Length: 185
Image (cartoon, rainbow, N blue to C red; front, side, top):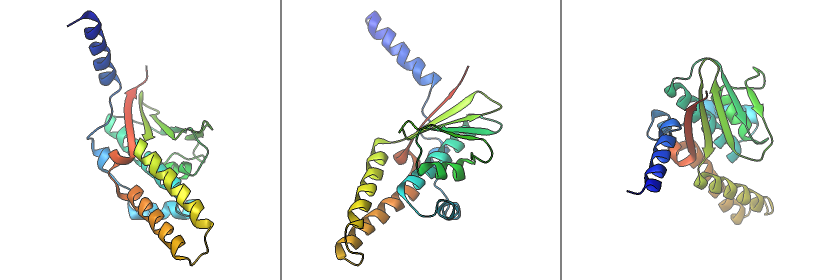
């Protein structure tokens, strides 16, 4: 094996060991409870793809943090000012009110959760398929609003949107969220 190939292999292995994805963890199997989703709907004011994937980001990041050994008050940073913030607040328990959520407007659906009493962090992002699906629901919603309320076409679009929302509620976390855990120095 060439020296360059060995060096690349070592760097890749070290990268995986130091910042490993949470694949196959129990956090990757948890879905939000209907009661908690109802709480989110009341808090947010309606059901939408953004609040639902925010719920999935918040829940999976919180559980991955606990599984990784993170301890103490959780702090969150999210990089988009939009509907997912409410899902994160409800499901990660990091709110503006308890000064545990900072939102930075960078137009990136990325959540970083840290634990106060440890060096652990979790980064949660949407999978490419989830991001594509949420964008599709947004486009379908725009199309539906242009149609008469009782039209067959609008009802068909609304059914497609509801199917996407159901997928966001119930799909395995690994289909919706990519989790990376690590430790800060």
